[in-house]
Amino acid sequence: DGGITQSPKYLFRKEGQNVTLSCEQNLNHDAMYWYRQDPGQGLRLIYYSQIVNDFQKGDIAEGYSVSREKKESFPLTVTSAQKNPTAFYLCASSKFLGGSSSLHFGNGTRLTVT
Amino acid sequence: DAKTTQPNSMESNEEEPVHLPCNHSTISGTDYIHWYRQLPSQGPEYVIHGLTSNVNNRMASLAIAEDRKSSTLILHRATLRDAAVYYCILRDASNTGNQFYFGTGTSLTVIP
Image (cartoon, rainbow over all chains, first blue to last red; front, side):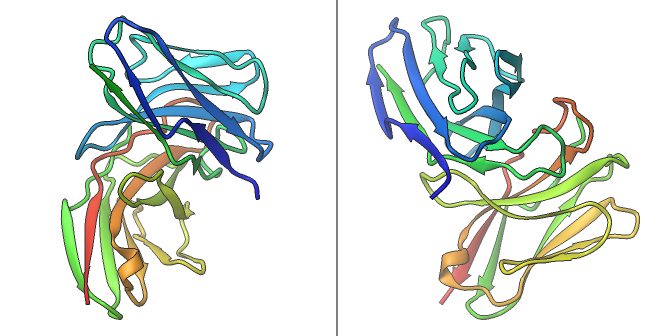
């Protein structure tokens, strides 16, 4: 089955450590996205990528970094500069960036930093 | 950014129709209206989307106002599995990044 795989489902880190969240898709989609969700809140866009080797900042990119070396993969690194990293992180993809293309989401990684 | 306004919560009885409203008064002519739903601790799931005309699929129907400033997601017969947070978002048809705003959505409770 085609879809988006995020791993791990739960991740625990100590404050001050960088951590990388994995996102892989086998849908052959060009566009990929990272969102952050805090309890009781909607989704906020961190980064998105329209094509390999290209990515753009979203609304809350500070303290995060991404890479897009392969079409299938869009890992997110939460750096020590992110002041409140504990959150639910969601990866998504779409065939292309335009609005007629629907978003497909993974099941998320819940990151806890203590 | 074009944004949407939804009620925080709604209730419905099982097997009855549900109408979930969304206001998007600042919608532009190239914005598509998308609906997604999210269960606890899961990623959102695509429900339906449209531009100007009403749309139907196996999950739901989307009714779009003539001036496009509001829309309604219709679940024809609510089941317990439809209990979720429903998000209405606008996505620009152009190739820009100005299209990803998710609000807090509507939390739908289905009463058995």
